[in-house]
Amino acid sequence: MKSAEALVSPNEKPKSSAKITSARLGGLKLSELLGKRRHQLELELDSVERSTHIRRKYLELIEAGDYANLPNDVYSRGYVKNYAEELGFDTIEILKIYSRERHEYDMSLGSAGKTKKIAGLKPIGSQSYSITPRTILVALTSIFVLVMVIYVGWQFSQLSTPPSIRLSNAEKSSTTSSYAIVSGEVDTGSDVFINDSPILSAPDGSFSDRVMLVNGSNQIKVSARNKFGKETTKTIVVDAKTTSNDSSLPVVRSTVFDGVELVVTAGPQAIYIITKIDGKEAFKGTMLPGSKQLFQAKQSIRITTGNAGSTSVVLTNSVVANKSIGSLGPEGESKQDIIFNKDTSVQ
Image (cartoon, rainbow, N blue to C red):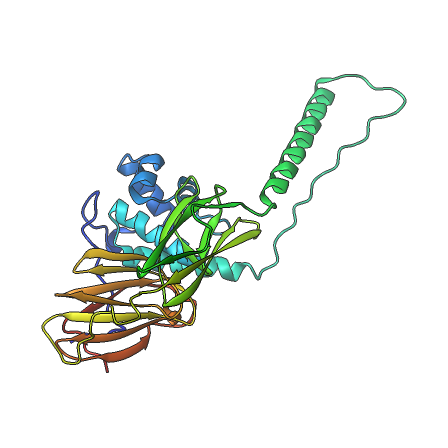
């Protein structure tokens, strides 16, 4: 029998070649491993972007080891895992390297950085001077620096402006469904959040997310945040009359059976989860605080959550019945591929 804390899924069959395990990683940095492997497979970043749905700019940042400009750990860890799977790596080993390098980067933020000194130009004499190749080079360099300063200033003014959000339906609505589809567009390069939980968006800034509702009035807060921390928020109000929290929820088993059943509850914060039933994706989206979902499988249920502390589960299988496991980890911590099998036992 396996414990719930120790259940981490094995990698699925890699797409490009046989699985590359720790014995073949050679102690290289994460950026070197991924970049060299992609070149070996003769893959272009554009094709990897299409197959993994990871923006090209994030793929470039990962291959450059640029943790300063990568998004938060929940996003970055998922990007690295999906990219490593695409290249045929053992994702468990790759994520260990990522965690170590990310930790080293976070620790380095506390160290004093070196200040670069820019040498000033010597003034040209007021009495007389001659035009030489050197003075021409100095003049061209000064013009180039001035143009770059103007360009950077313009870019900063653009990026420091709060990003825009264009929702497909921003009006108050009502539904008898257990979920609502929230979609729209944000400025390119902005991260998208629903009730402060990050969601995935396309390279062009478009997004679409399934949001699990609770009975009554649901306030869905959609936020866009650029890399300067500027944020714009819009709120959608959805009145749900029949959801998975009332009598429409399938009856939870009270006795053991030959299979596995899991009730997932979100709270106190919203959560973004991905659930796979017997290896097939069953749900990907956001659950608002207080919302519940019931998942049933013959062999296994796999859960990935962006906030383990707000993800609570109740398990029934061939060993335990209606067993409350509680939250899957600390508040704010992401958890990847937690598996519950039909013979999982919980102390």
